[in-house]
Image (cartoon, rainbow, N blue to C red; front, side, top):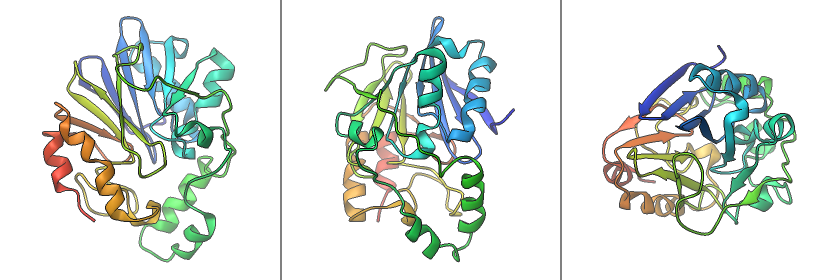
Length: 247
């Protein structure tokens, strides 16, 4: 098993913690929606997590991306090549997924921060897990502008543009769950703080106040389970979690 935890947080909603990033499976009948896909080195772990809940990788009807960073894109191309799985993102994130531009941590910034506690071992781990691989995915498409998607679990995209131009959370109303990607995390390998917070300083682009503003739409959701891209499950009203976030 190449993931550290797999837990059913609500009926048919499964949270999986990989070595350095998380992904989510939503099961409806025999079909699945996969939200995010780990690093390139996590593909086997993603497949194992699917089999662990009694389904097959072929049962994934689509991959939804919170955003197009390499640690969330790792399974997108392999699943498309092996199983014909389509992938979707916010319209503002599609060009990023196609790698018409790259909006993520620059190597020079990483090198400049290797002296900080926890950064070097984290960096070594993610490089081993495929962080330097090209994950350009020209088949990624834009999902419809609004409303629940016609996919298992009927996830509803919630724009949380800030960490990237088209970053998106996904709300599962029937389960009271929101998948927050990197807009709202509960921890990270390079920090010791736990609980709802912004992604650590190293991965912030632009004004941190804009990142706080980006998560405010989550406060309107009737959800009490937060599934972040980094950190563990958080239980409690999402509006309270958003209120606790600060620069």
